[in-house]
Length: 172
Image 1: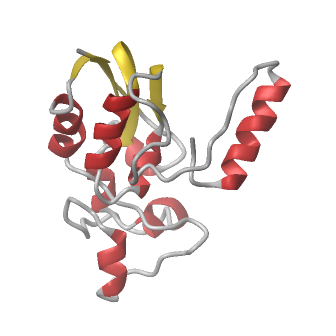
Image 2 (image 1 turned 135 degrees about the vertical axis):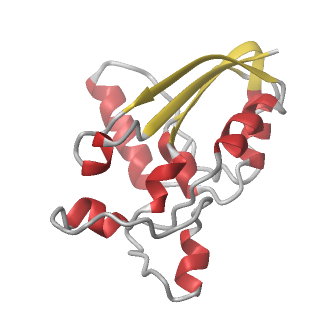
C-alpha cells in the first residue's frame, strides 16, 4: 500500500524481477486502511511516516489489520536530525552546522511562517518525538520486542549519532 502510483509501479517492477507475486493498493495511510480486520501477519512501514503529520491513524490501522501475534516493523528518522537545516546538511558541507529548528519539526507550518520553502517533488516532512513514535505503537495493542539504530553515512550528521531508528512490535 502506498499513496504514490510511481512507488507502486517500482514495487511491481522489483517483485517481477525477483519472481514475487504481490498485490499493490494505492491508498492514504492517514485514512482508514482498505483491508479487513486481522488480515496480515506482517505490516512494514519504512521511513514513510516522515510524510504523516499525525501518526495516530497509521498505528491504529496497522494494529487493526494485523492478526494477533502479527508483527509491525517501523523505521523512522531519529528526531534530532530535523534540528538542523537539511540544505546545509546535504548540500553545503563547508558551512557550519547550527541548531535551527525545534522538535517536533513540521515543514508545513514552517513554510506557512515563511521560514522554509518546500520542493513539491519531495513534499512536506514531519519529525515526531520518540514518545509519539514508540508510545503510538504501544498504546494500540502492540508490544515492542526489538529496537535498532543505524546511520546513513551519506551526510555529515551521521558522525554525531544514529539517524535512523527501527522498532519491531508484536500484536498482543
